[in-house]
Image 1: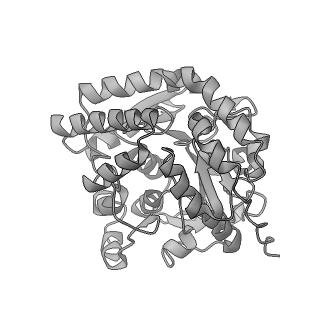
Image 2: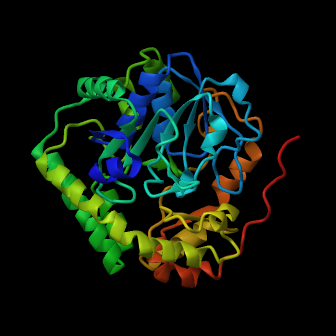
Length: 376
């Protein structure tokens, strides 16, 4: 937490997960019934957090250069608030949302700056993840400017926290340590198999968890309450709102302390991947940022994923299909869904830290065909 407080200059609230922080921020600054603009490409649980807060998700047009909200084509006059994504660490055009309630999801963008200013400092709140750049397996931080907001959010957090356990804490730390060891040793495939065998990953329909509309409709009758949405929000992180003990807090601090030392290696990987013809165009514009993942846009994405796993490089953080197709009827659809569908089908996020393992595969990949033109 100290690293984030020093980087942002904001007051910081420790959390068991980024997910809980997003819900707290949405409930604190938004009023049930308000319209929230959000990207069509983001993690499954984000949509359910917005619904749990009692807000109406308004799906934005997507910019195929970076996979974020296309601020120039979004109808900002019709929404009350904006939730940024900063997909893979590429920054949303957050200054364009001035005058709106802005909640920054900086899970992928702990180390990203825009115009020399750290992300997480533009909106009412920046919500960080300790399981992304630091790789701590759990943990989040909610960064805010005002002391009064911090105290109100702290009280709201404590009301939602569930009891933790030493067993859960030990499992969290040992699982995270095992994943790091598997990556270092190039054992991604057996590690993935064990993770699935132990039930540490939810079953999915393709890349998304099952929507279960009947159950979701029942949960919607209880908004703005979070616990009824636990079946969706807790995906792959069941203790997302459980109290964490001293062991986990020590491990999280240890992992966060390693982030600055990894910066040079991450930047070098971004620079090498930015040279590929398949790289998303915005990467070249932000090649000076230590991105969490570098998105490539390739023709045969699934075959590339299989080959990368064979070489010990797992691929995650795929959000396919977009929300328009994943949860029709639960959000106001995008005015131009075709570009989001194209992005979701072709994007291949690559870890720049392990670029030396992935480049032999990536250099042989054909770039995706051009995205469909924007709707008039």
